[in-house]
Length: 154
Image (cartoon, rainbow, N blue to C red):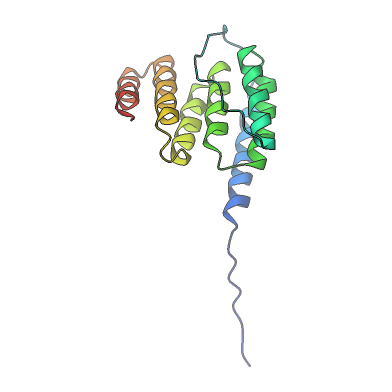
């Protein structure tokens, strides 16, 4: 009698989505005090003619008006549509910075950089934001390293 072994292959998008959902669930349960609003200067997102592009524009407007929770919800929807869009991850990093979640800010910037390809302007913005986040966390060495990487991004 012949037996067949079943090999299960995980779908990477499914796994990434599951990890993202668990991360949001865990961080959503933590009660945080809203820090004083700090202006984050960044180039406005490119107006794309896609569903994710219009969601990105909407989230950017929410960030500009200090409505970080609304921006987060909008970006979560956009990331379900286009999980490999580096600009969406950068905008989510800006939201996390505005919410005072500097550890997540760094993680989302790193994710954006991993997807940015040759978009030097976006990579530079990510390193600048990481530098500010590290400074807020009191890690001046990493803040300086991130600042140097921002300056080196061409």
